[in-house]
Image (cartoon, rainbow, N blue to C red; front, side, top):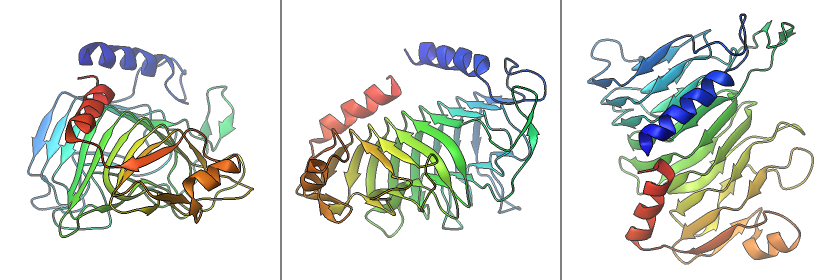
Length: 289
């Protein structure tokens, strides 16, 4: 089943690959697949197994990568988009640094490039992060660190686990800061986080989305931070399954059910922690195992 999912995803990725100077149906520009890498960063500490800069439409798939001082995969900028990070296993990163995660991205510079219609644009296609197993241990504060204005990420069907050193629970699973926006986090299993999302304010039409996820919280209370609770730029939240010590979850400072009674966050439920077997079953289902 995993191989079938990989093949289907690869076909879709190639047919729908993002803006390029040639054609939207072109194959990924670079492929890094089926590799095993360990003990990175012996001499250079700010490095990664995979690093891309001013490059897009790339495929990073089926790799097992572990043991490094900083991020395992790093997207340096937001040019073009259309890259896919899928079916990878990442763990044991941020062993010599913090404020980071096994995946890191930046987007500090606006790029103008030729879009699918041949006209100049600054809007990138979504980069996709899917079907990965990522353990944010050692000094990782996130599994997916969409940092410094990162935008247009579609993150789905991942198992994202926090196990930060010296901390029972990690930070947040979805992250947007310093102008970040349009990051969509859905159909993931988020385990052992303080909140499901920690985001910044966003303009109407460019809001982040956190929906259809399973979230294990370290404590009762708000399951997100920075959420826009009124227009403009309302955060997209719906259909999440949230687990906390007692199932007492709040949103925008209100009891979840009261917030929902006002027409917000449809379909989201909250309950006490489930049995381990339930969580393992969900993990296998998400990854297609």
